[in-house]
Image 1 (cartoon, one colour):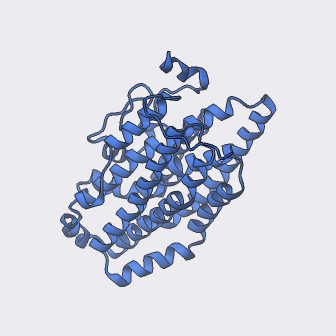
Image 2 (image 1 turned 180 degrees about the vertical axis):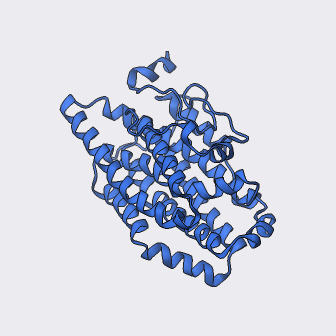
Image 3 (image 1 turned 90 degrees about the vertical axis):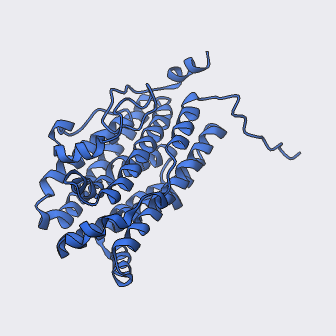
Length: 320
């Protein structure tokens, strides 16, 4: 007998975090066409050739990662959805990752010539450090366990994007390229929710493992982070040495690596805290946002919140 197809019922919620996340993502919905990117042309024309090349590569790299997440990453996470509502949230995330990738093309079409755009996309296919992290994450998406895939996704959402986010936030903090940076802030706001939500789903599964399995997965997670961090420091040096920003970007990377670990329910690895990050960057991030814990009031903030590991009992109270 054919199994009956089940309609999704939003009046009966199994996990309230699914509903809260859906509502927050809908509230945050945006499109690149609403941002007047052409207003940044004056600032763009005043930048040096080195700055323009760096920014083009930054956005090229971000485009590649968002393409990976929208075409492969979220699709594999859907297969382990616990509820129909969770799958609906992933559908929303998947669409917005496509919006992020499209937004970078909007930036390119505004600031760059056709030949420059072709060069940027050719570079994304040939740069070994960029391809290494994309191939590493995608390999886990294709061959990893359900929980390993969630780890890879959180590291992409909450860590690997941020070497690229640094540049536009720096210019924003100095009053330049403000409309380009507005798109980055909107993307960052989305990624903050994505990483927290997927990390929460990871924690539910992780807390159901035996102690031996937990230890093995935790060790695997930290080994993966070290491998990604080593590659990311090389990538950062390549992008930012000429600008003299490499050391500051490294602090920002380590801070966000800690955020990624916290989203997974693990303790921070690096000593870097928000106060250690260049204040120009933190000001750019926090302008017009509210910084508070995602689970206490689903907000659009970015700073690390005081979040404890969660399991089934933490969200059963929503249904009582």
